[in-house]
Amino acid sequence: MKGAYPAKILLAWGEALTGNRGIRDWLMKNGYPELGIFCFALRNQQEARDWLMENGFPHLMATINGAEGNEQAFEWLQIHGYDVLSRVARAGDGDDDSVHWLKQRNQPEFAMLALKIRYIKNQIEDDNNDIHKISPY
Image (tube, rainbow, N blue to C red):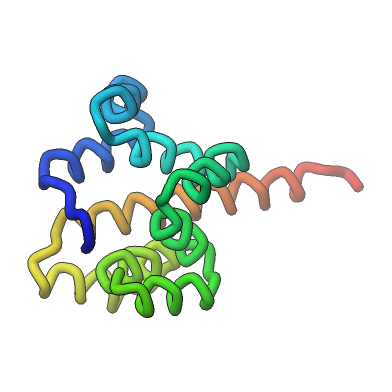
């Protein structure tokens, strides 16, 4: 990936994704604000999504859009040389072959991130479906 992050930062990002606020805040204050803001954008916060686009991180927003099943996001990532993030997005959208692709190319941190993104997106979808099931209307 262009502008690769050290493995320890990728691991920290994974922890931030799963709700570790202390690590998320540390990332934001120590040179990685885009990774902290990604956590909010992944959970559909429009202000965070806008921030990623306005501050030079369209590849991170495309990763989220891809994890939400947006085919154009996958294509954009590949065209712009973000093959690893394209696979993270596809894996986040449920493609197990992309998880294997990441592992085969010695990208275990990105495979882990992809699975965490998948879990979060599935959780959001389940929560939305549960709200519709509860409603008497």
